[in-house]
Amino acid sequence: MMTFEEKIARRTLLKQLGAASLAALASAGTRAFANADPKAVSNPPAKADSCILIWLAGGMAAPDTFDPKRYFPFENGLEVDKILSTFPAIDTAVDNIKLTKGMEQIAQVMDRGTLIRSAVQPDLGHILHSRHQYHWHTGYIPPLTVAAPHIGAWMAKVLGPKNPVIPPFINIGQRLEGVGEKEELKAFTTGGFFGSEFGPMNLPYPEDAVRSVQPPKGMEPGRFANRFRHYRELVDQNPNRGWMSDYQQESMMRSMDAAHRLLQSKEKHAFDLSVEPKESRDNYDTGRFGRGCLLARRLVESGARFVEVTTEYIPFIHWDTHENGHTTVKKLKQEVDRPIAQLIRDLEKRELLDRTLVIVASEFSRDMMIEGVPGSNAKDQSRAKTEKLAEMKHYGLHRHFTGGTSVALFGGGVKKGFIYGKTSDERPLVAVENPVSVEDLHATIFTAMGINPKTAYEVEKRPFYATKDGTGKPAMDIFA
Image (cartoon, rainbow, N blue to C red; front, side, top):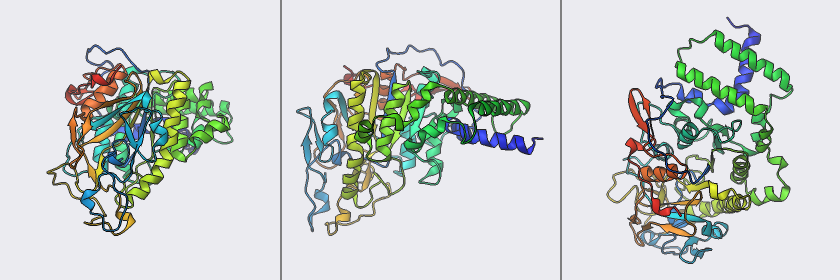
């Protein structure tokens, strides 16, 4: 029986170290055991050592961002079926690449990367954000009998940490409590069956990240270390916990050990945005997302393996534009354009871009008329149902569209100033050249990071592959 003081000590330590081991609770429900070594495969030579995923959560409409189409400005009486883009095209640093107005800064760095315009998603019947986000981040369509690891967890497991004191998988900007589809978000924001040591360190507020690598307020480091030692003793004395398998218990303790090492390391200053020069902070600071991009750069500089920075998914907020689409996206571009471009420039300046793969992506695109893909029976999610425009709030791309999506890749061995794939110039705006499925996109990302897409671990006596059934094929044409 634990004393009151022991309970308080455990609670304090769990709260403090929870940022690095939160995934344990989400993944503990599975008792699947992942073998320590993957089935023998030969890995491709790594083109990148680190990966940053810029996640524009909620459904970034490609025709209003990276894939401009025919444009009509807002006008009362404009027929909705004529609307493909609600922003005009603008020039970029590459002659044959156009983006849309409001992305002038990203336009100037397109000569550092590859633009995939033919990413496609399956029609899952119900075009729901939670299902498509789970599919994009894990490569698997829910529901599953085991918890599929996040793509960042795969990198943490297969490649290990780049710096032993920096968590190999860090998630910036997404609150997991109290907003949106929180249970569904937790479902893929974990290490899955790999265990909590490969799950994310969650930092919802980048400006507060430094608090995650400090002892509790008023507690000296020595006293904190002593409490951590007592917590370990409490766990060792009570090993039989029915809510977690032996493997998951051991994984959780390893993640706690890693968190403790971080709290004692000099690298913890990478989490402190206040030490960044003011001019640099100002270049990024368009809000929480911009500060997240700055934090991602600092973490990669210090040896992070995989970092995700998100605009945060909340239903009907941000990129989830079911009405007021044009007005909302105009504002969102002001939040993301400068930080993304600055991240690319800073990585290049620090000679890190060549070995860092930066991905800009979203779960699917949007269209004014079609829900899902042509022929889909998916329920229409739009709240802007009208044949002709009468109000500005109806001007924008409202319906979920899975037939053609854009993904931008920078650094990490990809070609510079290159376009891969194409969507139709007229509705339906489906991929008509070099379609890239989620499995193939993951295979491409894994290949850049030096991971064979057929890498598999045994789970419940069955192989579980990095790409579904090991079928993902990398788009090798995008690599230099």
